[in-house]
Length: 494
Image (tube, rainbow, N blue to C red; front, side, top):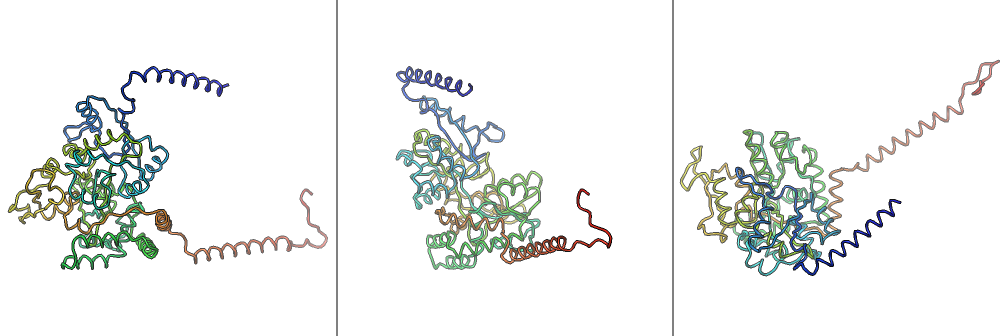
């Protein structure tokens, strides 16, 4: 009865809906979906609350208002979030038409482009929009070189390094990625519970001598910056069988020194002092440093000298997306004032430059001008960021003056020096075979399966135990004590 009732109710609803659509289709100039933008982003990855005191602004509501003012049309943003790139990818495979704009990480963007899952941006967006005007020239060149420009717009970016507590950790130890492979910091460090990030760490450790040799050649003038960066990128993207095996061995060895693996708890563990070293994304490093300062704990961030990883998250439009609305939303977020709001709220570094962003950074970090001294009486040093900002505004020199010590803190994490950029690589996405091999490696590292000799010992113990058990059973059946003469053994029930 219930099934029949539901059927008739559904049929009636469908009939009413069909009739209403027929009546309304003649009087609507465009479908209602034209005024809805479906955005799919990481959790906690946009400023979505108004708080003038802290510099926060609800950018979703602000976009809806801005779009209405510019076009005369209303728009509603339906905003949803995901927790991992893989969850996002699987959702799009099932329901690609359900989203107009998504924000994957670098390797997933490459995968989606290769699989033809995304729309191209319009020529007007690429030439005339706020994004094209204000995106950092460094980021633009990176995207152009790799063929991502037509399909993706950078959102946030950064490096990988070590956050550490200088009260307990010697910076010199962390100038190499090998620094945490040490009894000195036993149970004091964590790395990412992420196959790609920890694979990068393993590759940097395995090939650290080759990377240092390359760096020495470059500094001696034996190769160009482009050649040097290409060589570093090639090394850090090795996925041959020998490399995977070497990385597996290195990371298994590292486990005995670690406090553990983490995805998001490393920041808090650094703040509370549970650990003193954390392998971290630069955005998380900034968050940890900011939060720790509130309890008078000062943490630092260092990028080892062998290399680093340049990571980024970017906007892409899935096939069938409402590209007009999607591009309008990206352009709105790319206005420097809105980029500043986002950076204030989420703590990560925007790929957008512009004078408003640079001036905000001056307010955050500048300690004076050329010739000034820091609180210890030492001259301030120049932090040259023209590579990131030049061409996106009217300021003649995008440099700030800070103490040497400050370069190890937030400003260095948010905006690394050009020297760091030169030895930083973008990790490419793994094809299916490589992905399977690396994931298998990771399962072994995380589970560290019992070695063959242990299986043999366990099997031997089991066999011996069975034999002993059987022998007792056999003796019990065959060796019952005989009754004394004149007696008999009672049977059950007697």
